[in-house]
Length: 392
Image (cartoon, rainbow, N blue to C red; front, side, top):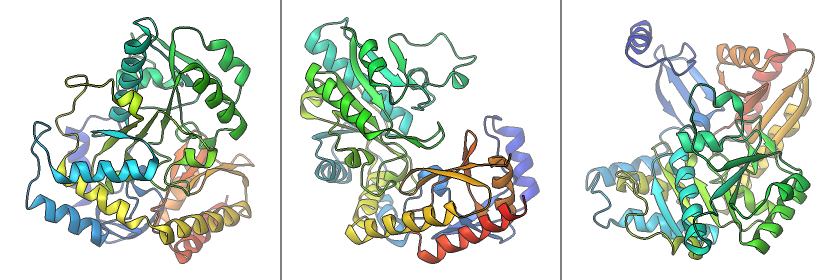
């Protein structure tokens, strides 16, 4: 594979909506991606939180390969075993009651918004349909989820936007109460604002909002597209807040590398969604769901203990590195703020040159490693970061 040819072809035929690094990744195994020249990169991005089991995990590969040789797609006009199996296991793992499958985090969030409005309009009438979200949130790039995203930078050039969304600052309960009126049907939150800088919500704020919402039958939607499926040290991040939401959205790590989105709903919400109220041609695809089952198979107690141990090791090591001002996030969803005018984008580029793939979020460096990482993997990443930061 010729690197220059691949990049030139991409630049000619692919819309320029991504600021790509000048790398052509050719294959991967475990924690490592390899470029067209054979150079190895320790990957602390996992495809922006997607490759939860790393590259080409053997059990995942076997599951999707076996399913692909039997039935690759059928549509939702018929039943398939992998779809129901994955849904049952998600409900057992989360305590929610029913699942709708789609193809992405944005589609999952769009579905959750529809479910919330359907429940509220069915129960209270057509005027109760407003969704509140948090300033600095990110929920997707479709028109509705872009509107739900509480960052003006993403809104430019794409209006007019769907109506009846409102924005409130995180961790300000008084402002939340002032924003609630008879039109509000749901509050949508990320427990850690990923694209907003890897910033976790305050636990007392979350509890106060939850208590108020439960008392007034305002639905709680938790966007776990990035925080879910073990990323923060529990299967759902909201478990660590003692929160029992009405709707949870999943995507990214759930598919292990294939496109998936999921809306998990409580019974009272799911019961209002009947035939033709929502749909997705590829939702619940049997190959993708087989892969999702393999992901859940891997995430036993020992797996989660390692996630938490590696998170503690990583965070402790980061705190002692040059120019590191603070470390944010939860578990293996890590944000790093720098002092001394060090720019996250410069750190990212330097790490890439030294064989470590990392991300940025606003002004912070962002780490989302595969959840299979070892003690040695963390030590190597810290050594590269130390080398990079010591030269700045």
